[in-house]
Length: 636
Image (cartoon, rainbow, N blue to C red; front, top):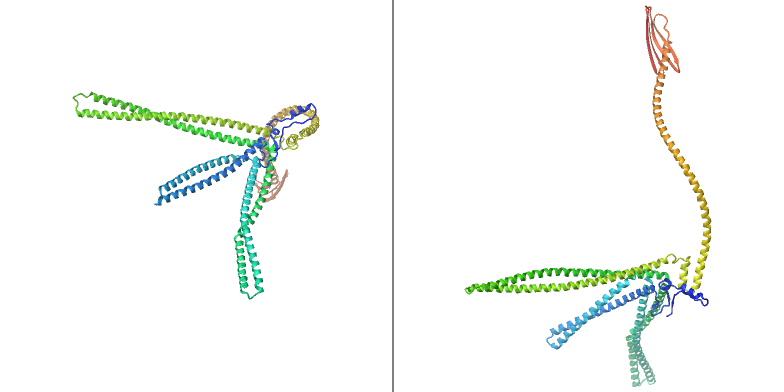
């Protein structure tokens, strides 16, 4: 398989600068262009010769998915074998039961049946264990393959599905061709039988024609007539036999036609599956060729490996905790055993003291001791010796238990240490995988500024470096683009420099104006403070004046009212004064009017004139005011 490794180096055929240029343009193997490979896809092995991190991630995902499919197949097969083994064992047991019920069964027959039961039981156990192992392999494979769920693995997942579909299509073609071969063989037998029956019918037909022609030449010949009848019966039998043979092999002929159609359909489906698989392979090729997808695949793969490492670490930590729990249980049992051993040792010591005392009592008996005393001392000694022996056994067993538990504690502690070592190692792996993830993420961030940006020469240069062999032209194009951007930037910088100078002058003017404004603001601030004090004084004076004006207004109002009354009174007095006395003696009536300062008045009254005195009474009105007067005069 052809494999082009993208190591960037200009191939300069002449000039001393060639090695320098080539060295300058070489990328490190860990860099993006150093990792990406352009591979041809082999129909059998795919792209397995490509050696990029992204490819390896895709290959891991593909192999994991294939392993899961294989594990499923193995699990199903193992389960089917268990089912068959259960059936065989059940049959063997049933046969053994029948032999046991058969009075004619020999011991040899029963032994053979029992041996068959044992054999099938062993086979069942072995196949059950194999099925359990297959199930475990399937669960492990499923756990691994399910981790490749990131979108970056869609292409390889589709390839796996396409390959599975292609395999199924190939199997369908094989099965259809096998069925076609079987149907063709059966149809061939039928064709030969039909051909034989047709030949017999043709011969019978020729005989009948010949016999008919012979009988026609001599119609009165009974022998010829009998021959004609026999030939007719033979023809009918041959015709019936042909129908029977055709009916017998009609299904075989139909099966052959259906098998041929099935082969054609399976072949067509196989072609479609091959085309689909080839197209999906192209997608995988595009994915592996794209340096952008490689960056994403690297991250997805690193995340998957980190997650796997964390799962292993967490499992190891759980194992450490379990081992610590076991060690704690053993330590607790050991403490109880040691306490029991101490109690047993104390009991043994007490029993031995009691035995020694019983021996001393027996030895202390004199020759004059009675048989009853000797018997009682002997019984006590025997009981003490039995108790001491029992206490010794209990103490020994307790010591053995302490020894065993001490050993178990050492083993448990060693297991804890071993599990902790595994957990520590798993933690180191997690740290390493996390560092890998940070590394590929940082690598992705390095290119984040220009990835996918067609206006950025860096993006275009990277695409050209990876997808083409004309690296020199790619570099020149990128430099040309950069030069154009530089020229544009230089022009913009010149414009910006002029603008900055103008802004600087304007800023100086503004600074002077700001300083002037600052001084004016200070003067205004002082004036405002003075005005504020004066306004406060004026406010107080205005408030005082307002109160005084209110008082004056009320006084003026009262004086105005009094002046009106005064003017009315003066006018009324003038009107009253203007009334003359009536002429002659006796009573009289008089009217008068008066005017003063805009007020008019009318007065009326009665008078009485006599020789010795005069009397006068009057009433006046002016402006709503009423006046009255009376007077009397005497002659003295």
